[in-house]
Image (cartoon, rainbow, N blue to C red; front, side):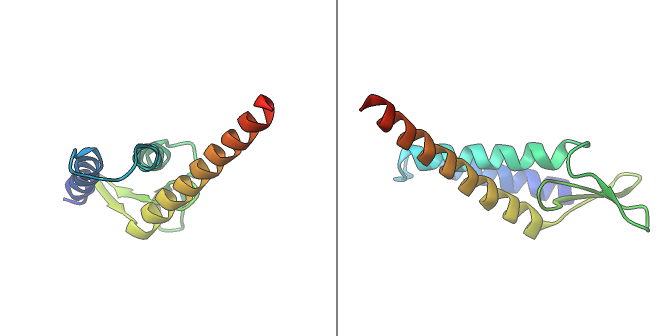
Length: 109
């Protein structure tokens, strides 16, 4: 059930971002989309941010833990971890974009 909720939330965010009625500028949309994709990828890669606690729960996610595997078919999601990862990736990509613009302006001069 948690997995369906997560995928539903991701689809809802994608639909609202890609909606033609959305008046947000395209750069901001691309940053949101890129950070959403990065958050999902880094939460599902098993070798990055992998941790096992004393109860045998497996935590995945980088930099914050977003997905917890509890054994069998039981997965849970840490909404605060996923939200934190989303905003950290957003600001990271925004910083990279800013640095790219500054460097390309200096090169042109």
